[in-house]
Length: 326
Image (cartoon, rainbow, N blue to C red; front, top):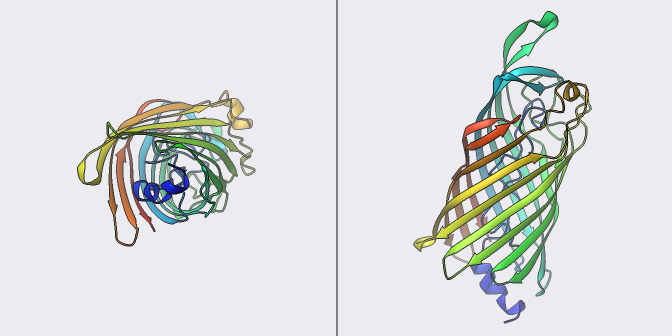
């Protein structure tokens, strides 16, 4: 069967890939400066991550992420040009993503673009060292639009009916408000470029699907604090078993590994503040076809940290999504 003749069946079978899960967490600069980053481990992979629909469609995705994490008080953490002995952070993210797949014919390649508007609420508690070495507990809260995120090009390749790949360049722009004197900020105050590869393998006889997403985050310098985050490698793997009535359940394993030392006066004093973490948890999804070739997909996951160094350790990392394709 040709790729062209499979267009309608593939549209009805798969929800296309959405770049809605490359999520950031806010703070004075919640990247490796601030001990988190543009991506929260375990929230990046989505069902059908490697599939770009061969049909020209629109998709709208709404996502909610909540994280409650900390770094113990025995460790210094760079926060807004200062350091904190330990850090407690709560983050609630609401993201709205619009994705358009383009009419690129019946070949094996298909293309899409997406745009995400994020809103964030965050609360930070820290112990800051002031003049004379005196320590004081501080708390700060912020709530506003976060840095916008967009993927100008997502290129999907169909190896077969059951094997798919998507390549993308994803960009975070520093559009949120930022004040270097605040601990909680609705921006990271830097540009971030994330080339990414996603792969989906479907095992129809077993009712099983494997989705993998991997990328590298490249940060520009935070000019307000003279802090430069090192490149960060991230990878999430998700396996799901499908059941009747559109329900599926599975596990997600994710990791973030910093590839070098951070740079700048504060980072140098902390020996580069190199971080890494692992997360593991369950996911449940539900897919339903609607009238007029529309489809609805829902998901809920819990991905607690199982190992962490110089990054926020969280047992309360939750994500829920809703996607409408039309």
